[in-house]
Length: 232
Length: 210
Image (cartoon, rainbow over all chains, first blue to last red; front, side, top):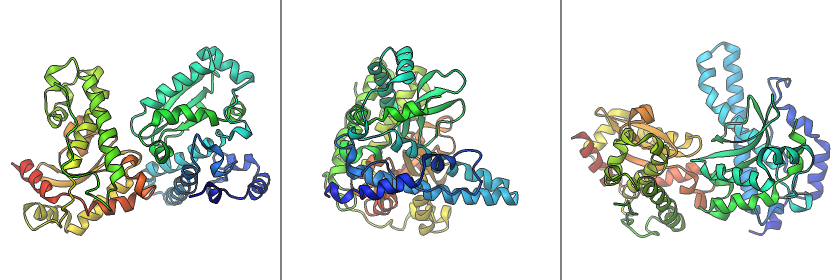
């Protein structure tokens, strides 16, 4: 399948992006948003084929339009079920719905953050970090290369499905590399700076079982600017 | 004494068009082999455990030294599960014949169709990587799931209510179906009924009941 067929119109994408400011997307996850907020699939900030050769256009299209879309759809169904159960005082059903919220809501959050912390080379993908984040990385890990080593070792150690995140401690500002199982999102004491999806669907069509190669190649499309913006 | 990759009882293309050749080849020669390599590495200084048949090793999981447990859980589990899986599939699939296993299924689920639905639902709703199983526990059949490479043979302390004797099992890790089925896990699950080995399942049922 030719990559050009997979690309959405760049003009249309730019128009959509300028019409929907980032804060609107983020608001869907904040506690001040109305409880009836429906999740919607966010538009990618680049074309499906733009991250090649690190990640194939075929994978990007499936990953975004099928996997992420499914998390959005199933989250909305679970959210409605949870809201109704809470409304009617059906505590048992509310509790039984928690795993679906965790899994699908987490899947939506994780993938939304992921698309934003990836970029084609032409949009700064792979360019090393600067400013406070660069300094913090050097302070914590010695160098960017050392951080990547730590990060990739943890990625390779994930058993089954999961994610690896560079996170920042909300209290101390310290950096950490943490892995999360399945679609568990970064919550609580830390907030996410950048993440890599280690689920097999994120790489299998291109890399098959050679996940270490995927972990090595993805750094060429990591958008450090996004991570810098997420730093507090 | 090291574990070795068991040969498939059929060719890599034998389960086409339901399970594709490329997946079978990578699944067997790469994924399963990696579990074996890592298991051997973990148990290289432990002759008592590494000479056990891997299915027995699963039942003895609690005897594994604490520092080796995570590796044995993932890679011993992987070796045990996949060794079972290849035998649990066949190119000569037939419907489940009348007999003790069919009667037990009908008794436990009401009908064979209800069992199929329960198994399909379980396999579909595994969040992340794992397996769906029909197991025999305390004389009764049940459909359960395990996460990652946990085996029902590991016992209650590891897998809780999923502990039991496997009769059939289905790998729902994405590597088991992604090349052919992409994100459509339900289609892969439906295809499983065309390759499941009911003869082996019946043998397992008799073994587990004795």
